[in-house]
Length: 375
Ligand code: GTP
Ligand code: MG
Image 1 (cartoon, rainbow, N blue to C red):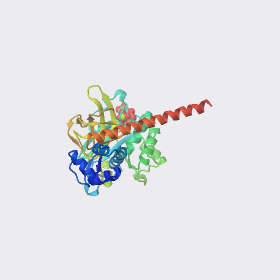
Image 2 (cartoon, rainbow, N blue to C red):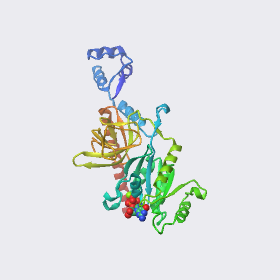
Image 3 (cartoon, helix red, strand yellow):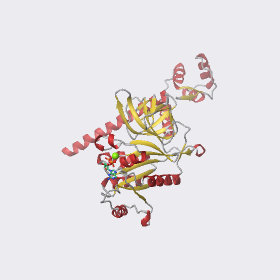
Image 4 (cartoon, rainbow, N blue to C red):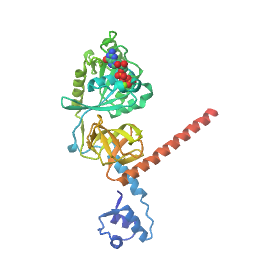
C-alpha cells in the first residue's frame, strides 16, 4: 500500500519526529522515526496537528513505480532469468490456411468449429514438441483485424507467415510482413497448400523477394518451408525451423515474480462473468492473485489452460483463461498481478480516469473536425 516514513511525515507537517511518535503511541502504534506508517494513519496524525494531509502525491508515485516495474521493458535481474518457450504468431492473408496449419500442428480441429471458418479472435495454444514447448497465437487474416495483427507482432518472438502457394503474396500478407519487420521479429514463411495442382513455389519466392524477403536457397536469409496443412506435410520441418530460430534467440523470463501478461481476447460470459485469455509473459500467475488490466481489476478466481483444464499456476509463455475480473478488459492491454486489493483498485480507477479523459479528448476532436467540415 501507501506508506510514509515517520521522519518524512514530521518534515511535511513541520514538527519533530518525537512529537509524531508520541502521538502514534497514543494511537497504539509503536514505531521509530525511520519506520513507515500507513497513509491513512498519517492523515489521522496530521489532523492531530491541525494539518490536512493530501496523500495524492504518494499514491501517484507508487502507481508510477508499480507501472514501471510491470512494463514489459522492465529488466529483471539477469540472475533471475530462466529459459522460456517461444511465442509464435501465425499471420497471413485471409484463407491462406493459418488456422489449418495450427490444426495440423495440434492435430485437432478448431477450423471446423469456427463460425463460417473465419478466425474471429486470436486463439492461443501451447504445444509440446519433443519435450519443448511452443506457444502459438492464431490471428485472423480478414482486413478488419489490422490491430490484432499488429498486436500479434508485438507480443511475438517469431512470426509464421502463411502464404497459399496457389494464391501468392496478397495485401494482408504484405501488412503482416510490415508488422513483423516493424517489431523486429524474425519471419519464417510457410508456403501452404502445396497439395494444390496450381501451387507454384518459384512464383511465391519471387513475390517474397519483391517484398524484401529473400529465401535462403536464393541467397537470402528468409527461411521458407513448403507445407500442406491439409495433408499434414512439411509440419515437422516447420516445427524444426521454429525451434532452431528460438534456440538462437535464447528467450528468457523471470518466473519468480508477480505476473505480467497481455490480454489476447476477452468476453463477458453470462454465467462466469468477464473471461479473459491472458498470455503470461513474465512471472507466474496464480489463482488468488490480485490483478489489474486497464480499468478492470479483481482476484483470479479460477484459471483454465488452453485445453479448458483447471490450473493453479501459469508461468512465462503460457496462455490461460482467467475468471474474476471486475469488467471485460481490452484485448492488447497489459495485465499484471499486484500485491494487494487496494493497489489494484487505485490503479484500476486511475486507468479508468485516463480512459475517460482520452475519450473526452477524442470526442472533442471529432466535434472540431465536424466544425471544420461545415465551414
Ligand atoms: P482466416 O482465419 O479467415 O484468415 O483464414 P485462415 O488463414 O485461418 O485459413 P483456414 O485455415 O481457415 O483455411 C482456409 C481454407 O483453406 C479452408 O477451406 C481450408 O480447408 C483450406 N486449406 C487450408 N490449408 C490447406 C492446404 O494445405 N491445402 C488445401 N488444399 N486447402 C487448404
Ligand atoms: Mg483462421
